[in-house]
Amino acid sequence: MKKPKLKKLKPKVPKIVKKVPSSLKNPLQRRKDAETRVNEALQDVPRITNETVAEHREEVLGSARKYIYPLQHSKHHVVRISLIILAGVLAAFLLFCVVALYRLQSTSGFIYGVTRVVPFPVAKAGPSWVSYESYLFELRRNMHYYQTQQSVNFSTKDGKAQLKVLKQQAMAQAVNDAYVKQLAAKYHVTVSKQDVDKQIAIVQAQNRLGSSPRVFKDVLNEFWGWNEADFRRELSQQLLQQAVVAKLDTSTDAKAQAALKQIQGGADFATVAKQVSQDVSTAPNGGQYPIAITPNNADIAPAIVAELFKLKPGQVSGIVDPGYTLEILKLNSGNSTSVNASHIQFNLQPITTYVGPLKKAHQPTIFISVQPN
Image (cartoon, rainbow, N blue to C red; front, top):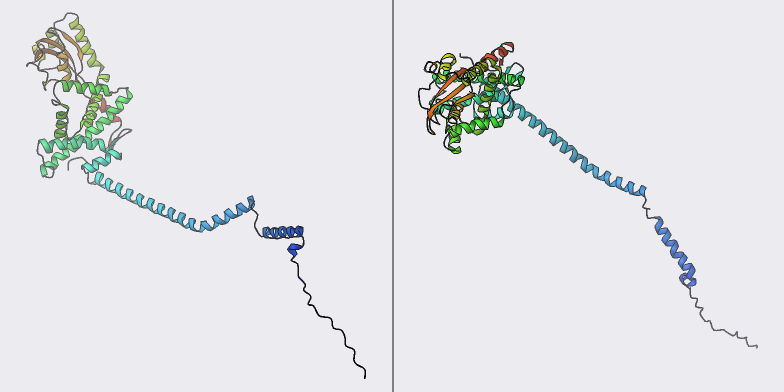
């Protein structure tokens, strides 16, 4: 029996196959792959250009507008409402002032203060408006004087009648001042601050306004409820009126010039005074003042007193304009405290002589009732 052949068995050795990573295969390939991945990643990143910046800005602003526009709308709404309320308040205030001025004719300090800011008219004199403030300026100072110095009660029957008279006087004065200003403008007549200062200096030197600036202010406030600015305003208006008359009244100036020429030519002062002086109380006595004149004599105009104390005994002045007359003065005797003097007086025309025709040609229109009931 044959023995079977035995196959020679080869030992099975497991085959180990190691996979080499691609990254280790080739350095160049590896770099190439990295660049590819980077490029792929960069493709997803938006590029920054002028166009993309503009688009992004518009996106941001667009998202913000939905919050800004409501705020702007609200702001405009608030401003509009505020303006409407302000206009309503102003209209109500003006209505209140109109009623207080033209219906109730209030003279209170508050209403007077309003008229100093808002130019409410009280009358019209020809082409000129007369301010309510100018009317109250005159009325309130007279009311103050009668209340404080005469103890007048304007709430009584007699007081109301007195108030009516004061209102008429104040209105006449305010309208008259408007016509005077028209004449001054027409004939180029002005009053400067220096003119006012000069007049104040004269009366202060004669102690007519108190012994000190403090006393002066107290007197103004006590008698008229004024301050210094109010006094200067009134004085300036008076000087303007006087200057207009002096400019227009040429006939009176001619008479004064002729008399002065006679005296300078050797004529006797007393004789000329008896002939031409218009002061009926002194003309028969050759113009002699009946009393000695002191520096603070309240019966003689300040300009006359100031001129007399500049003269030497026997000396004759030139033509002096104290406001409502033209004067030629002679110092007879005296010293620094009192003098004896004579004068020749020429009365200037009243301002109504020149205002009258103007008023007749352009009648004033009064916007409130100041006539007695």
